Image 1 (cartoon, helix red, strand yellow):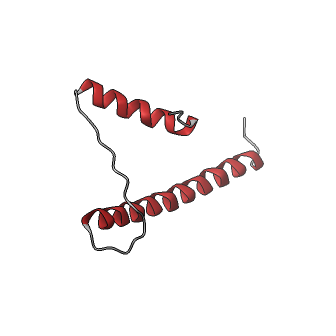
Image 2 (image 1 turned 90 degrees about the vertical axis):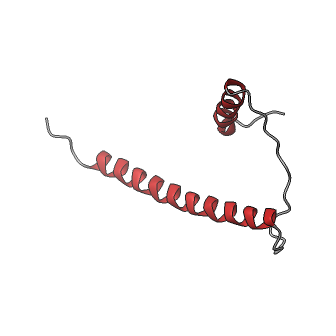
Length: 79
């Protein structure tokens, strides 16, 4: 399938790991947010929680980076 540019590096790294270590990888679809107590549903919920936490952290880091860049643009550089 066609891979979006932002996913391409991750796919390439995964492919390299799988081929280098001669591993096989199997993906399974898990229905999201079913409220089920099944193991796959619980695992999906845990992954969602970790993804939300990582996104919050990434947004904070991006805001800090942007603020620092804006500050550097406004503060005159001494020679």
